[in-house]
Image (cartoon, rainbow, N blue to C red; front, top):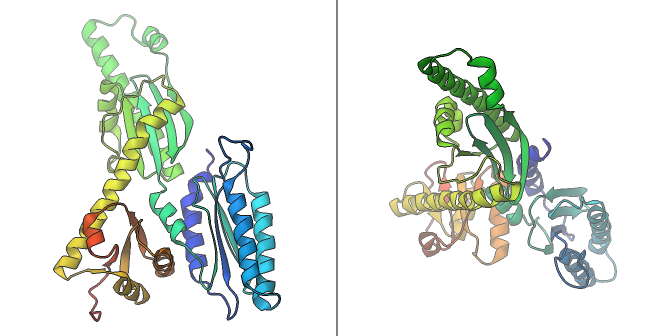
Length: 364
């Protein structure tokens, strides 16, 4: 997992802000494309990507809807050509691809994603940005540290991807033979304890460096209880706040897939808990009539006035065009989007709302 991958969230956030400011010129549209680039796992054509079929069909439908001539058709054909070129040049490792194009306006942006998108091809006045906002909300980097008293293994986990990074390993037998000859039992025990603390301090520094390098928002530690006790004491406060608590049974010799499967559930649950908590805050603010608004119209108005801090959206909210519009306005005004699933309080409020930066008087 390269250092370039660690910059993905920044790249995604900046792309959202740039594209959110675009509006198609009169008479033409912006082509928004989201593709699932994963090859089929089964079937007669195992290398076929379903997104390719969706793209081909939708581009044909859109072109037919634009008539036989005119600026919209001319701009769209330029868009289609650039989209096909971007798809052909996409990395085979990318599971998702998003493209935004308007030849008449000089807009062309694309991003390869480590997670698949839902296939979507839309030609409209404004770019469709909900899927990007949802990916930014859910995309998270976690560092996993597995330790015993002489070994530290480090992993970086992003979604379904995992990579092992350089850790630290000492041979306890060679260390003992070099350093403990001639000691009595008391001195030996003190020496071992000091060594464990020193190892934990060195391990904590490596973990801190990796978390900063990869911009990790979560830290999971697992392994030998004695080692973890010293490691927790050695971690700086900036890292202890990122530690995800849980029972993680990972052997120091565990393979990559075992580590990934072990932590995946906890990371998903942590993200869900966070989104549920945000929705709870919104519901409370709305009920108190203080720093919260609910419903599409009031949420949109708060965004247009720059008063929205966090936009909370039920992932099942319909129509989808409204989610795209709220995501676009959020990106343009610097508001964060929190995607929530199955929160009864949020659904009772209409499925969307915003936590405000300041009190706002809106017409009922």
